[in-house]
Length: 295
Image 1 (cartoon, rainbow, N blue to C red):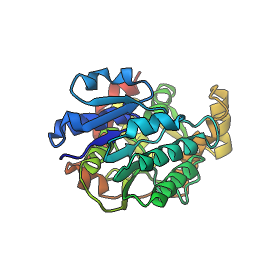
Image 2 (cartoon, rainbow, N blue to C red; image 1 turned 135 degrees about the vertical axis):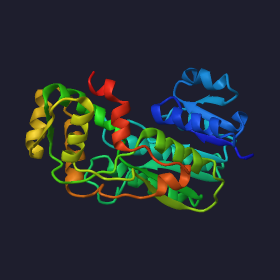
Image 3 (tube, rainbow, N blue to C red; image 1 turned 90 degrees about the horizontal axis):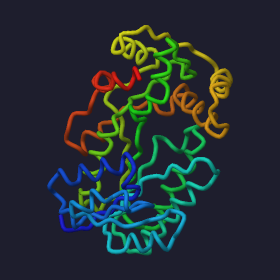
């Protein structure tokens, strides 16, 4: 395609995977890809492949406007600014305004499932960003990313070592999806050339309870793993005792609350439709990640 595609947060884990998928697809010339990051030096390996690299600071509107210049389709990957209430939404709104000012023809955004009803504290950031994009009148593709399989690494290595996995998610279910499968779908959406506006939710193909995941993990690790069901308050207390920063504790607890209340209990075929590939199963992911789980 001849349109110029831009990826923000390109030095991050998802951003790099999206760039890799664009390049391997053969559908987009490297010269028609713009990769942006707060520190463009981190993108030197992509510059060597012919990708345009630019500095872009989400806290600096002028830098975003300069970075977005000449881009037809802009992918805004959500930032990780969670330590200050309201900061993330302000950053995203600044990026959306910059995309509009730069004359973008299509805006893509990585959101989250059901931000309208989610109890996760940063859900309003995503919903607010979606609304800001819609208000521009520019055609959009909103990709509501499901819970990454990689997020299990936040708890599982310690849980396996301890033999106990404390959870407040009850019988709630999640269809985890590998970050690489998210990247494949995102790259395909970015390069699709569509002029239609639509919202998609990217999930895995099978949803599981924490008990089912625990049994799967125990089998892969070759170690017993007991799932211990606790209340939100008990989970928060355990996280505080473990030394987690105070601002993170309610966020982490809310993930389990959100699952228990069914706000992420969905399976869609959207990711596979975009990528054209069969998604990685959770069992395959865990087997391939055994060394990480046991680290």
